[in-house]
Length: 553
Image (cartoon, rainbow, N blue to C red; front, side, top):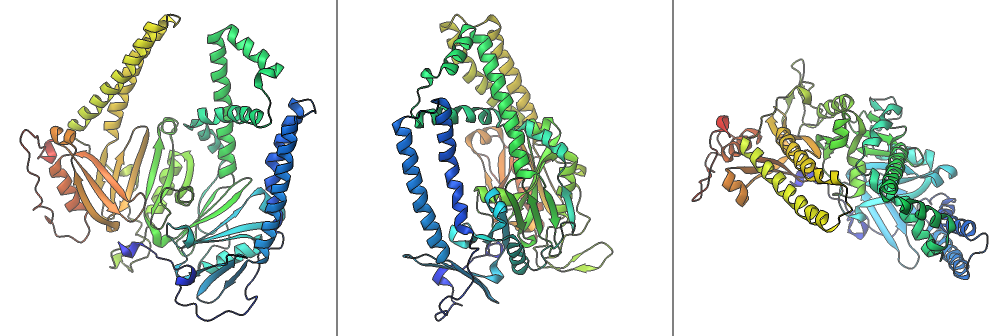
């Protein structure tokens, strides 16, 4: 497991830093750094403008006091930014990257260059207006202290620093081109499951703003007239409200997708690392080191799957858990056509480095050292025939669907009995819910599947979010077989493959216990055939065991 972790050394823990550096040693950030603080003025200025419009140019005293406090806080923040810029120095030597900052409380962060795993560049709208970029250096650890950030460097200097810290970094966007953004991909933003919440955000923000500036919504004539018109016909008003929320949500989803992924390019650098460039207003340049790759995942949420779309994420070590930074660094392809996702997935799997410490044959018979890309013989995901799971797994999902239907029908029936104004056709809702739940149960069972290739363990599961994971077998560091009381009654088990990459555990759900042992035996690299045979699972009293993999069900 320790072989997959890249520990970093920060602060005074770095044993290579000795003595006292000369005063003033190192470089400063760009002198325009304090100007980035101007972005803090936008929210109060926007709220003041709204207050002026709503009140007809006569804001209340409370709003003026709030604006004055905001101005005073902004001045203090600006002075703090100036002090931080004046006391910040960074230095790059042959063996380390060092950052010193702070006035009263001085902090020194040291990152050895041989432990640098990623150098990501980000430029917000304010950075781009000033010609600056932020540089974030990662060491592959999950602690904030192990990520060094230079908040404002000239864009050219930031790009040169990335090339300096990452040997083999691409100098041209066309070098190792893998995928490029197409405007047609924007249609997949309409299939986002977050559209309803996105549609509600503007309304919540608007009423929150009215509360902050001291305006009662009941005193706004336009809002009062709108509410009266909707209340005159409740059903029509509800339909209009839902349509407006969905329209705003879909428009917001498209705008967010465009802001995050416009100009997207996926480049494979000479070192084998993947570089993702993207962003419309805020540009990002994210690096995924080849030595951290352990596989890839094809993700197909329900709506996206109905639109024949998918996205690709990397299964890699050294990403900071489930944080937003990890999600950004892990995503290799945004929602796009499934055919494009499969093509990118095949490219990534073909370049997962060997981890077994042995040379492997490459096409043509020549040898290949460990750490080099995998041979092109890696099978394409769409060509693999996954092994189906037993019918007992289907029964479990049908039972769950029945329970969910009961949970829905009971309160729904009680509500209809209490409120007589509900329309008659509403009685069809429980039947529709039951049919949908049953269809999802069958779909969830069809999604279950697994197989083993010479390089990868492939697992598929999920209906609302279908995931197909190809995990390098050599990256698996442990196996666990678990059985819940319901699984024991059904004669099933779950096999979990532990790894230092990705989510940490990948599960093959609801298979026969005998098949779980056989799968672990087959997928474990470097073990003799039958190594897991002694671990027989004996049935408890009254327990059912599915022991014949070929006759499951």
